[in-house]
Image (tube, rainbow, N blue to C red; front, side, top):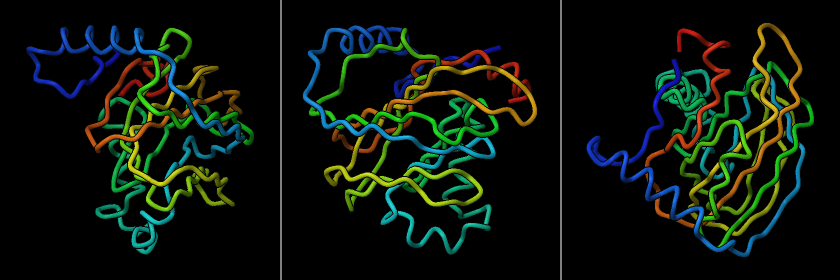
Length: 206
């Protein structure tokens, strides 16, 4: 059974907040944006998104499951049911496939929250993302050279949308594509905007 979307409001306000949020996003004018068209790699079913400056002290504890940002972000992704986790500046995307060496990733840096178009995507999640150095990295789990791009430095709200998701088991190559929309905002709790039901088949115990 699919988990309910999680919204940063009290339980009694959830229905109204969700309706107001969706209506506001759909009615917002399209903001100006800086666009980067990238291809990123996923492996072991994960993509890491981060600014290296936020992780300088984290890599030393990469094998410490209690304090490592990677492990904490992975746990947040699974335990929250969002399948996109966040901890200490690290975003961990749990992908539907085992690997995808050239997943399209469109990065849009916007002046304001962009209109919501969740109907065009399989899975949509929002998380905080600090980028103090202006360098944004995308790395596959298990090592390899990260893909870097430059954006204006700042603390962002990040909306990750994915599509082309296919449920499967074992070592399968995926053909997902992603869009990462960013706008300057204070750090607030992650939110699940749209849930892909294929995760119920792939990870029935989550």
